[in-house]
Length: 178
Image 1 (cartoon, rainbow, N blue to C red):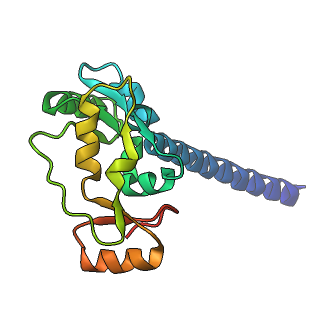
Image 2: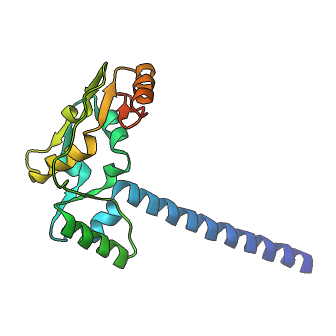
C-alpha cells in the first residue's frame, strides 16, 4: 500500500509539473500572439491622444499583393501608428508602465527619399495605400516604411536584385523576402 501511495504521489507531482509548464507555455504563446497581432499594445495605447490606430486597420492592399506587403512590413503589421514624436513617447511610456510591449510607427518627419526602382521590379509602395477614412498622416508612414521595398517578378530574380542592392527590401508576391 505504501509503494502504491508513493507511486501515486510521484504521478501527482509529475502531473502538477506538466500542468504548470503547460500553463506557462500557454501564457507565453498568448503573449506572443498578442504582440504579433498588436492586441496587447492596442489595449494599452489605443486611447492615447495622437494614436491613429493599428497599422492593418489603416491600410488597403491591392488584391494579390497581401503577402508581399506583409513580408516587407515584417513586425510592423502588428504596430500602432502615431502622429508624431510626442504621441510615440506617450505610447511607449504607457506600454512600459503597464508591462506591455508593442511596436509604434510614428509619422515620418521630413522628406522620405525613394531610390530608383531596380530593373525587373515594381515599387511595393504603389500596391498599398491608406484607407479612405484613415488620417492623412498614414500616407507618410507608408512612404517611410515602403520607400525602399520592391517586388521582384520571381524569387530567382529577387535574389539577384537583393545581392546587387543590399540596402533595399526585395520581396515576391508569394511573400519571399531578401
